Amino acid sequence: MNPSPSDPRVAEIVALFERLTPADLDRLHQWYAPDALFKDPFNEVRGVPAIRAVFEHMFASLDAPRFVVHQAVGSGDQWFLTWDFLFGFKRYASGTQCVRGATHLRFDADGRVVMHRDYWDAAEELYEKLPVVGGLMRWLKRRARS
Image (cartoon, rainbow, N blue to C red; front, side, top):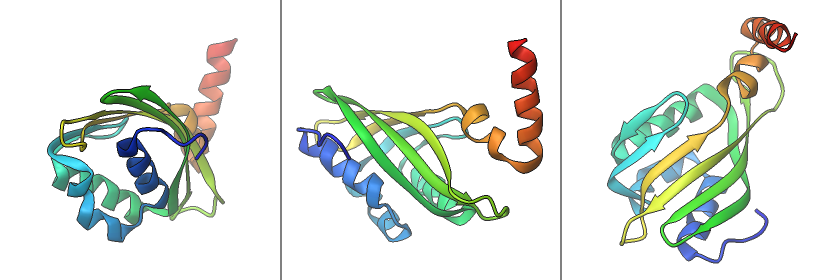
């Protein structure tokens, strides 16, 4: 990560994201409030068990998923992280894929995440990389430009 955030809550959550393994999922309650909201282009869930299920699905569906956080910007209880998400598709021999995105975090008074919202373009960053759907998505993109 570069640069290191000055807020210890943010530094801890960044370290979690960058080293996240299935073993860490049993301890998500240390970083997420019991009723935390998690939203990304595919999920909108509330509560630590539901957030855990999102991460479990990630580990079950992808090869070697990991985050590389590039920036942390914010103040007080609101922070944004920019990151690359690196992974392989288990179903396809596709090599390492990269999704670029950002996360908006809001912390509660106890220093735990109460809102985790991920922003990334599913069409460009994911669908275009799939074997069959990717060709169609790239064709649609070219048509939209012309």
